[in-house]
Image (cartoon, rainbow, N blue to C red; front, side, top):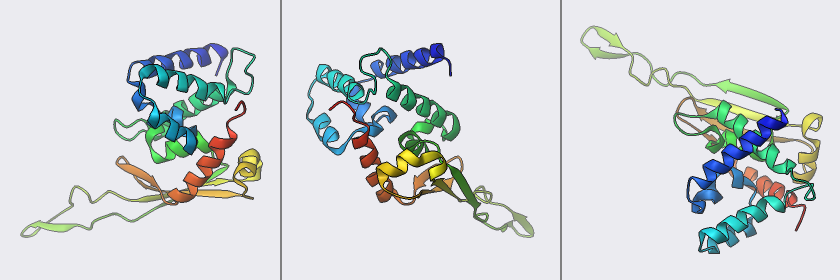
Length: 201
């Protein structure tokens, strides 16, 4: 992505946020790096102005080069959101709001992926005497996706979560839903990543 494309994407993201109430911001993909303490603080804010100042502080505290105009951390997050939206959208639900999108934004791309596809949900059944048919759900399947993070591409992440390697599993119903199978583990890792994302306390 060129410098111009980064600036354009940041500008469009700004417009999208300003176009809706900042009260909703804490549940947006941009806010996936909120620590538990920051989440509590957000809930105490009573005005749009206070929320806007909080949001500015959120990005500033995570800026690795605060003396420059660029915020590289923010650029990485917005790029991941764009990737997730492009890969994992389900219906009208943006990809960055899905389970796989959330993990991609927080942990980054996996080192490797594994996928298993389950059997068809239903067998042919009698619909009228002498005629067999398939119900509308007959071709719906369940998929199991596993993302693997190893030292080859995720060394810094693994140091943060204090693991030699890591796996996140998803249960995916194509076109309908996805969910994290080991959600509690992921949320513990997310909290660690969120805390380490703060470089300017």
